[in-house]
Image 1 (cartoon, rainbow, N blue to C red):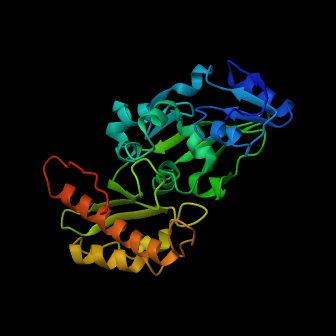
Image 2: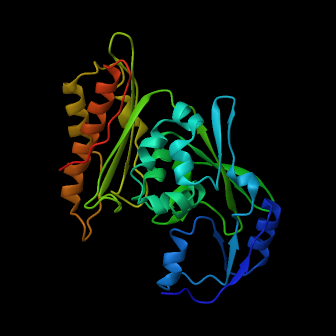
Length: 297
């Protein structure tokens, strides 16, 4: 199918893009186009104007700044997967990227586009929630920072104003080992559920820090810091991992849809959290810390 007719603008700077976004009626940003173009082809979106930001060089950089990594909104999935700075400082990105769609999608899709699309079954919104990323957004009037837990509001809805553009993502350096586990019916499909976990322990084997974010179970990624805190200073053992996996089933209220029942998703999340915790525990017990990716049968 072909999209309906539209006007086209290709700015070469952020101020020019923001001017188009504010002045033109019913304009949409075109980054990787992996979600917007299919929606236009199916007549689910009919923007009057596409503002193609791929010519804005400043949105394509990755740089280290103090204790953070600043990633431009136009950085593509394959770059996130193989960038050496990110491999060293935020290694969970590489894990997540291997699970996203297919190679063609990872070649064109962008981090800013994925986060702005706000699909609760997508990996990057879950990771952003887990690792406390901040989205830097700009309008003609101001620049502001929005935390991941405030950015995602509902299905495909974010805190972005109509005249705002995500220009960068600020990522703290990942200090704890992490693992992301998901289950999809077919490779490349959106996951029925995603569990992303970080865990660090003291030299004596007690839990020092712990966090969990879930995707695919509601309208936004799920995280509950108060629930996470109860496991601090517990002995990091397989018994604890099983207790955590069982406990989380009582904390969540998954959605029911034609892909899976709420009860199935609740049990699936428990399995995925347990898998992620065991992978982290295995990595902590080996010299090279190698993490492996597995899918449930």
